[in-house]
Image 1 (cartoon, rainbow, N blue to C red):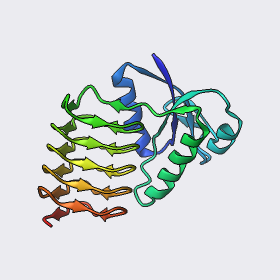
Image 2: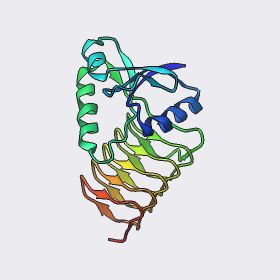
Image 3: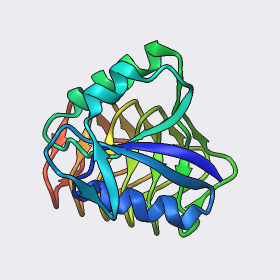
Amino acid sequence: MKNIILIGAGGHANSVYDVLLSTKIFKIEKILDNKTKNKFNGLNVINTNLYLQKNKIKKNIHLSFGAIYNLKERHKLFINLQRKKIYNFPIIISPRSYVSKNVQILEGTIVMHNSLINFGSRISKNVVINTGSVIEHDVTIQDNSHISTGVIVNGGVSIGKNCFIGSGSVLRENVKIPDNSFIKMGSVIKK
């Protein structure tokens, strides 16, 4: 098993934790969070800033906080960690999801339980495909976007960087979502 560090010990981290356990590929080495929380699923929580300042050893790491209302904060941390050149950002895919062999997924992305990613789609860096989402054929999702629970993204859709697509939303085929968009829960996007 590969050791991995999680940054974030909130609600979204619980779902990430469950996906990681289900892969039987990763063992959670440390949990980092700047909040005062002492324990996360029985593991000690370490201050993020202190750990990242001191660590000089190559590590696998995943950003396990959703940052729904501030995706730019998540992106900034991802970029800063990349610059240190000691962190790897594994692609994490739940064994309870379906991902076509003809899909490209880049580093730091997580595909949660019961999600589907179909033929020809391209998922960029540090993306969250949350539980039960459907990403149809030929979809492009740019860096640091969060596709929330139960979203349906129809064929040919293009989603920009730092976008949040709220739970249960439906995006019509070939729609283009610009960078930094926030689509609220249950939205139907037709154009």
